[in-house]
Amino acid sequence: MTDFFPENPVAVLCSGGDAPGMNAFLRALVRLGLNRHNVPVLGIKDGYRGLVKAARQAGASPVELQQLKDAIVRNPGRKGMIENQPVVLMDHASVSGIMGKGGTVLGSARCKEFEKREVRAEVIALLGALGVRALVVVGGDGSLAGARCLAEESGLRIIGVPATIDNDLQFTELSLGVDTAVHTLVWAVDHFIDTARSHRRVMVLETMGRESGDLARMAALASGAEMVITPEGGPLDAAQIEKLAHRIEEAMIRGRGHAIVLLAEGVKFDPPQNRNGAYVLKDAFQKYFDRTEGAFSDLEVRPSVLGHLQRGGHATPQDCILAARFAEKAWKSLLDPDCGNGITALRENRVALVPFDCPDMPERASATRAMDDLHEALSFW
Ligand code: ADP
Image (cartoon, rainbow, N blue to C red; front, top):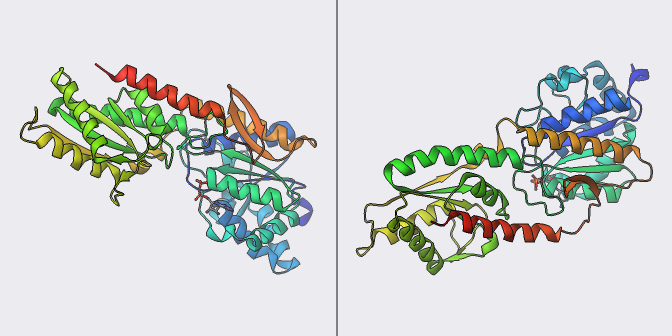
């Protein structure tokens, strides 16, 4: 059985929050491996948690390692996934029909204990014992920090691939999943707008994005939402909230019939609040509109926290194309003996491999300001 264990495979895992485009990436990585480079790919289930699980299974003795290798060969592709093996030999069928599907067929997870160096040492030993020539880590900020640790603590080739709907990774213009999430938000705004228009309402919609306002900003530009509030503007105090409410009221006096406000989840309040921002802002806006001298005493504000709706759904063509381009770059980099470790990144519409400690792109900050200005100019009437 062991004679057939693949020689120097590439391993891949998805980690942290799932993002549309992860499956398209897996499909591209496996197909390029099998069709273009003749290198087998091992899929690791459930991110770093799967690696730790496999390391524990195989680490006890050479017999246990042999048993893991035998199982990998015996149950390739979907069979291995059904058997819930932590490591699966990917075949063509295992990535067939998954391209646009949200989430990841390999599963993703968070794994606290992987943050310990001694646990990562077990993982490094496992990857060495399986003869893995390179590990590809697909995920967001935290997952790529983990990949960086592995790169620094081992002689292994490690390639990171940015995948997060938050677009908070500042070394790339786009991460996998952002385009799909923006599409989803535009769809959501289109639905809320019908009620907002019919009932002359203000809708406060809370978007994801962690500490970044990029997702909300892009969605506001693409959907025509009247107002976008992002963490980059600093914490919101009562006076600022009043100013925002006043702007909405003024617009309504000029004849607008509704307002859609996109509020990024990372926006902080002064004083700090422990409720979702959409509810905090709803109450403050409602109080303002309800004041006796207000122009629209019947104006209602409705909040909605859009939540995980934004993380799922069919990946857009743009995300599928970006996934294929990132996969191609990952292969080129890991097969090039002179190329170091790093992360695939989109820069000026080219895919590059940037080092794990790559500084933020200054263009990202200026693009943020430019988008804010553009939205401001487009939303006023
Ligand atoms: P995301 O990749 O979506 O940002 P997390 O921040 O939850 O998601 O990180 C995913 C996983 O990456 C964590 O559960 C942990 O296993 C690993 N990780 C995160 N930060 C670090 C770190 N600083 N060092 C090592 N591993 C990390």
